[in-house]
Image 1 (cartoon, one colour):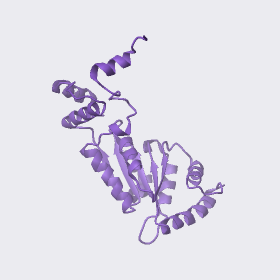
Image 2 (image 1 turned 30 degrees about the vertical axis):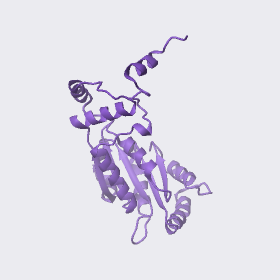
Image 3 (image 1 turned 135 degrees about the vertical axis):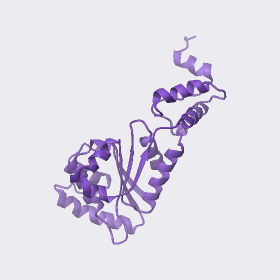
Length: 238
């Protein structure tokens, strides 16, 4: 017989079917506390009502990516979603990415060509009853130049509706970026803002209990004092 691996012993000892606290969580183990559920509902409302630019901020580890991934799993077939995971791009890079994602056949050579192809595409998509969602993650890494280009994209609209929804997701530092005077026009375009705070002590209890149960545990593993200490040392960051 092969000797047991440490991981096998760990799972067996606690009667787990899987490791409960992996960094990349299985969708089944996703836990949405009150804050996360409210953030998700806010994004869903913004998308449904075509609110244009929405901003989701929070410190590192507060669960912004979890909320966005959950949103992407829940969106309907009539939504065309494009995710930019790292906006360290120049404007032409962005145009090429969007042209490819939207399956615009010709690769644009400049901004004018891109907009000449994009605008008819957005109008056609709208009249087919579909919505466009562009998600910019890690927005604290964005340049002021690209921020202005994103603002200009948000200006493409009909009289009564936005033709492209843009969700900006970033760490707290992004608030400092849009507070700069040169970015005031972008700031004014933000229709909805939501900030994710760290978990409270009771939410930390709920989070840990949920992850243990999903992993197969049917007993109490951590004492209340241990969970209180976990909350203290983690500052409530999942």
